[in-house]
Length: 555
Image (cartoon, rainbow, N blue to C red; front, side, top):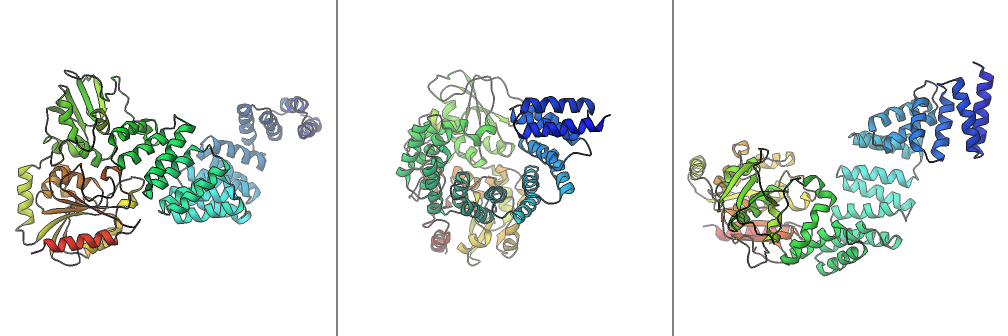
């Protein structure tokens, strides 16, 4: 091999590339590769040429050849690592970026991209470490602060996320993505006016940001500014009539105000929302949303969301059966025994078992829309489920004689629901409503969070049964043995109310749409009494009202 000619071709090719004579550079570098088919520099330069010409796939392949050689440059290793990062091939990206750092020592670009690759590869703490090292080199990178904030946000470390979004915006006040993301984090921290200000500024920079309009509407919703929220959603829909998130959030605001006819119609847009993509069931038969006669037809009813939703809307099974349809009800295994007590004629199928043939299907949460539900015609608002008498008797024997008012309690769930922190309490806070041993407290939760174990152990007056509650029929039987249920917004109050048991609910300042707003009762459940926060995030007032009302029940 004539190294003198090879090196001259590469040098001249590099000069042509820098002076934008791309075809001349390409010809010289291809000649060099014919002389040395594994020459890393020639392949690297040729990759940059193809990238500039817009042929990213060819550039990608050439960089892979360059980086397979021990003589690969730091720049080639970094560039290929970044391409793998963009392609979400995180393992390969990490390997190349670490190699570039090993050859060169720390440099900002590689550390930054390594942080993103590690986070993408489910190693968020390592990703945070890499991004912090990048910021040690360049503390004024708005992008690095933004990406570090994103990782903290994904970890639900919202104060840390907020800190870095603020730093990103100090560096670049017009960083639109950081403004919107800061607004989301402030929303998570229930700092709604501050969140609203972020969206407003973002929209002054780009008035077409549908997500910012939707987020602004939800912020107004969370501050009980429902008419203002609806105006925002309508504006977003005017900008983009196909925006599913705009329609769905509009549905929540209509529903919380009791406008069920329009609200449930808009609620059907959920199927086109990003958050619902994984919940879509693919059936060959069409969905039934009312308006079609289903007499003598077979319809599958199935659930899409949480167990509480399933319990609440299972009341509609009998209504569908009354239309003359043959109903197949698919249920979570934990609900099957309980559902056998539902009124109406239906076939019960455990989720996961083979399904028989059916003509139509419907989600339980679509039935209020299909059946034209309004505030006056909600079916079965007193009770529609029953406990197994044998299981009730077994619990009565286990609990022993009733010497005090017996209260079933639930203060939190283990739900992955995004805003669960708004509706759940720690036991140490919840138990303030029960300051003495006047009550026989029965824990209705099957699972206790780690942070509540100490508080539970410190209260000998709380009886916890854990794995003895094998499914909801066991919980239903235990509920029948108490005088009253006091709970936050979990599946338990739905079960308790569906059994017709007096139930007191602790609700956040703006609770889920089904509890409506500014009322102490519920059209869904006649035995429910609602205790709402009077100030956002403050549980003291509703807990004090519960303590007073409990005291009035005591002998």
